[in-house]
Length: 158
Image (cartoon, rainbow, N blue to C red; front, side, top):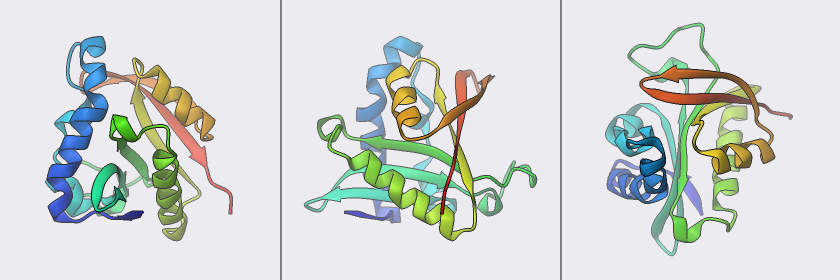
């Protein structure tokens, strides 16, 4: 079941991020950005979703809309950003990520957007391949906040 995240979900989201992204720490030489996230801030200002199974949070997604961020947003950058999607490793490969993506895309379409973007670290090759299978295309590579990132975009159909 996918549902909107609540303030009480912050700790579960932190745990999921730690579990899902821990495999990249050695490869990157530092914690990936999702492990350092301010979940309380995201829950207050972003559209956050929880994947739940038997009452337990097993995945989450954070979607940012430029117009609801109070700080440091370029008003011309109105395309939604998928900040993070994560699933506990023991539940990966069961379609939970796809269910979260479908919920996000419904939310994006309802908000009137025709596309959205995301970024991933260049070291997360399996994740990048997953996004490409889901219809995303790479459009730039940058070093940002000390991370080597690939930006990707997906155009939505009606």
